[in-house]
Amino acid sequence: MKRFLISVSLLLSVIMVKAQTDEQGYEDGKWVLKGVTGINISQSSFSNWSAGGENSLAGNIFLNGSLVRKSGNWLWQNTLVLDYGLSKTKSTGNRKTSDVINFATQLGYTTDNKWFYTIMGDLKTQFYKGYNYPNKDVYISKFFAPAYSNISLGMEYRPKANYSIYLSPVAGKMTFVTDDLLSDSGAFGVDPGDKFKAEFGAYFKARMEQTIMENVNLVTTADFFTAYDKSFGNVDINWDVLISMKINKFLSANINTTLQYDDDVKYINSAGEKEGPKVQFKEIIGVGLSYNF
Image (cartoon, rainbow, N blue to C red; front, top):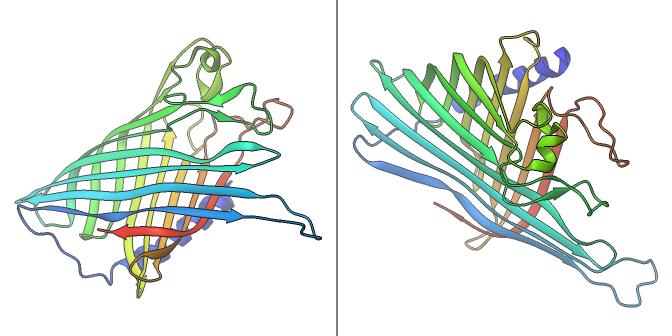
């Protein structure tokens, strides 16, 4: 785990150095809206194909946007990430491939336009039920089961408009499991029968938006939390990366990855048995229609 954290820290350092070359700024007193949204679709069809194969259809709809207002010494930032995808084959039927709702808002006050006294809050959950495929009889997640929310006070270092580092020694992490079935099983770290868990600890967040080459944009956000209890030092991690590559006016290619680690979330194997926590990784590569704004 220590080697993993060191690797993440080194990669973030490289990204931050690159981001400092960007000369973006804010327009005082104006709302600035930007981001990317689109739809990706993939399809395969076979007819008398000697090598074998199965007809399939898959796709996802996504949005990654930010809304920012700078007014005097005050800076208000809002980000929203939505993603939902499905795949369908004859043998497996419909399966969910991605399901994300992430919203964050923060208000900061500065005297030098680099360091901001900041209050921050966020919410992460999903749209619909999730299953441990191929078992479709019992769901293992759903809307607000789980949901995670962080509320914190701290300092943000933002020398450029496109990248920032935030550190809070006063942070609260809340876990919601509002479904009776999942709550009774003690899913996602709550005590069996409870639908809410609160932890107090330290929180670190880094975010960067960067044009890495012509028509290629990168948006990445990394969150780290450790609780002030006997588990101190066990770091919960959520790291999102979106690379959007514009092919022409209408077509684009996208790479979206998410890496997660939560010491309270136990891995469920194919037999439905709980094991220890593991690093979770998800990757989606798609070609489709997108719009940058």
